[in-house]
Structures are given as C-alpha cells and as structure tokens.
Amino acid sequence: MNFAPQAPTYPDLVQDLADRGLLTGRWRQVFEAVPRSRFIPAEVWRQLPDRCEPVVGADAWLALVNSDEPVVTQLDDGAEDGPGIATSSNSMPSMVARMLGLLDVMDGQRVLEIGAGTGYVSALLCERLGDDLVHSVELDPVVARQAAEALAQSGYRPHLRVGDGEQPWPGLGPVDRLIATCALRYIPYTLLRQVRTGGIVVAPLARDFWSGALVQLHVQDDGTASGPFRGGATYMPMRSHRLPDLHDVHGKGRARAAGLDPARLLDLGFALFAGARLPGVRLIHKGTGEGVQVWVTRENGAGATAATGEEVWQYGPGFLWEEIEQAWWEYEAAGRPDAEQFGLTVTDRGQHVWLRDPSEIIRPART
Image 1 (cartoon, rainbow, N blue to C red):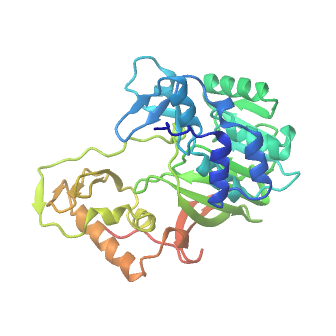
Image 2 (image 1 turned 60 degrees about the horizontal axis):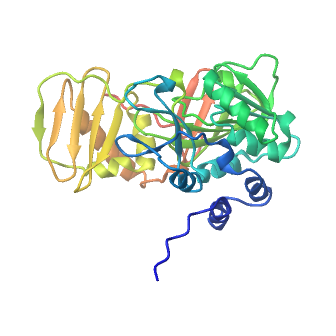
C-alpha cells in the first residue's frame, strides 16, 4: 500500500530550525507561539530562477508556508499587468531566525525594524519583547495595512509607521537594536543615528559585485559602527536602493582564451574582496549545464561575459576581465579568506570593507 507523504506542519518547521541550531532558548518558544501562516496572504507566488510562479490550491499554499522557503507576497509593487517581478516577500524562516539571533536582543530593549513586510518579524519581536518595545516602518501603504491587520488579528500591536525607512522616525529617540528586512546598497548614516551607543544593527547588504550578505554592526561611542559579515543573504532591495542589474555596454566584442573559471567569482569571500577592490563593477550570473555564466559591467561602458569552459568576451574601454583576474590573484595571495573574515565600518563620511581587522581596509585598485 502506498501512502502519500505527509505535508509539513509548522511545528515540523520549528523543529527543523532548532535541529539546525538556529533557534535557541527563548527564540524557540517565540517561533512556536507565532505561526507563519497567520501572516501570509491567500495569493502568493514561489520564486523560481527566472520567474514567479503562482501557488494554486490550499494544500500547495500550506506546504510552501510551512517550508523553509521565501514566499513572494507582492509583484510589481502591487501594479496590475506588470512584468511579474517580486517586490515583497516573507523571508525564509531560517534567515529570519539567523537575523534575530544576530540581533542579540535582551529583555527591555527597544527595536526598530526597517521593512514591516507581512508583519511576521514584528510579531516575533512582540512575542519576545512586548508590543510597546517594537517599532516597524513600511514604505508601501497597502503592505503596511495588511501587516497591521494580520498583527492585530494575532493579538500584537507594535508601533507601525508608513514611511521611508531610510529617514529618521520623528520623535522616536535612540533604540537598542535595528534590523532591516530589505536589502540595502549601503548603511544610511541616518539609521545609525537612531541607535544608541553599544547598540547592534543587523542588515542585508547587496552591493554591485555581490548579491547579498548579512552584516552585524556595533555602534561605537564616536558615532561610527563596525562589525563582521555573517554569511550570505538575499532580500528584496529597499525601493530607494534599487538599481538596474548591469550598466550599458559599448563597443564591439573581443574574444580571448578562457582563464579563470567564472564559477570562482561567486564565492562570497571573493565577492566581498572584489567589490571593495573594483567599486562600481556590477556582476550577475546564471547557472548553465556545465557551470555558470557571468556578466560584468562598469559605468564607462566596459563589460565582459564568461561561461565555464568557454571563451571570454570583452567590450568597451579597457580590459575588465583582466582586472577581475588580478583581483582573484590578490585574493588568493591573501589566503582565500572566507566571508566571515571580512567586515564593514560605517562613518558619517562613508563606509569601507576590511579584512580580518577594521584597520586593514581594502582600498580600491587603480584602473
């Protein structure tokens, strides 16, 4: 007799996160008390490599909600008949657990969340700290209203505000912790000014050369913040931080023999290094049957594309691929450090990536 596999349940999901070491102490109790399904609308999509696929039927909906997958909850900023690009989602529960663990929150501390989304993270924070200590801002008024309704129906009433999370919350005063649930191209210094000395900021960054990494910053008494990267993280970008994937490319293509396997460029440690050495160079990639294909561009019209086992094609001024290969040899000479050996420092004058120690700043290469 054949039995259909049993659909996953939310307790199964929480148990899986605990087994993976992502939920410890109070956070396990918090996750158990806040079912994810309360914060997922009926109409959702699954993110595929090249498109968003509608989830049809109650069983498929519940299976997705109780899995460790992101759930897309909005396309095209809510516009009708758009191209079908995901613009809001409920993040992977494992990523939520990782970020809340890095936040290192303690009883009595005030938290500011940038990007309320579905309200799920706000609910977890309310369950952990109490409603009055949780503040969350959301730019999209429709998304914010849906989050407020889901939170109220679940018995939570954090402080919610519709507005630009990059701007200070009027009258809020300093908070102890700040968590961003949208990807930032840089950490706005205005956000640091909202966090007290000794406070912690946890945010996903998405820079030109890399698609996403978590950073955990500690705010210093001089108003700066510094801390390590804590692994990869892919989030929807803050709307004001969106940019096209690639620059326009100029000139006729020039072929050359393959050198560096482009798959190596996708290592997060190298991506952090190369992003600091080659600021403004953008990279995207896709999988192929043999490996990967990458495209890199620079604002001046230079570009290159390379696929595993094939020739490299370059365009526009200069030799962009050679610059990337040079960055790789420098990275090798540094011992191929993994991503968690890199960190970020943010000041009122800008921000820079460092390797192993905040004093070891990775400077841009001369091109």
